[in-house]
Length: 108
Image 1 (cartoon, rainbow, N blue to C red):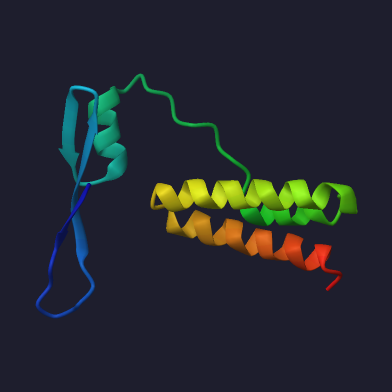
Image 2 (cartoon, one colour; image 1 turned 45 degrees about the horizontal axis):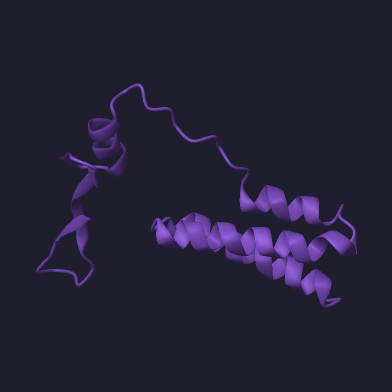
């Protein structure tokens, strides 16, 4: 859970620490990556890099109309995953890619 410092000069909070808990392990660090490393250790593998939404959107032009509904659902599901994880930039990328698929489906 993030901990924010409320500024007297700005209404936008500043992230100061992240707390991560998993089973009986708990860590507090300045970044999510550091906290995860504390909980899971250095040996924890980073997740496989997913293609950027822009790369996925470029692939859409090569797909047939039959694959567009499936592609739309994939973008939607990834966007929801990013939303749950608070990965706002990636969420936005997936929503843009979803919009492109939907526009292609609607014939725009």
